[in-house]
Length: 114
Image 1 (cartoon, one colour):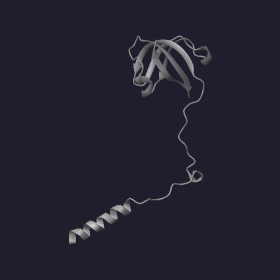
Image 2 (cartoon, one colour):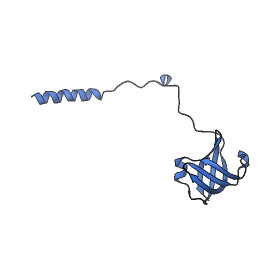
Image 3 (cartoon, helix red, strand yellow):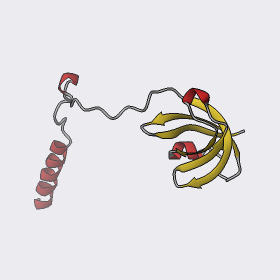
Image 4 (cartoon, helix red, strand yellow):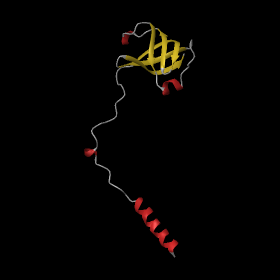
């Protein structure tokens, strides 16, 4: 009998814990801070050769991009995991790439074999 009483109390407590909880806040009461947006500036295209891969920095010997005011030469670009996951990562690999300005640095948005 004592076990049934304890089981019943446990069951009632468990069901109470699964209740509806607090209602969601309306959009007007949502916090004003939003996650930082991705850079929306222009993207540029170029081609080149991978010179060095060090962590998430890819150094490319490239043809440049006049629209970006980036002269041909060797430039280090920041690259994130999703870009590197599908890219050829061997030094000497010929690549086509897209990039944009992120603050004072250049950031790859696409890197693929050519």
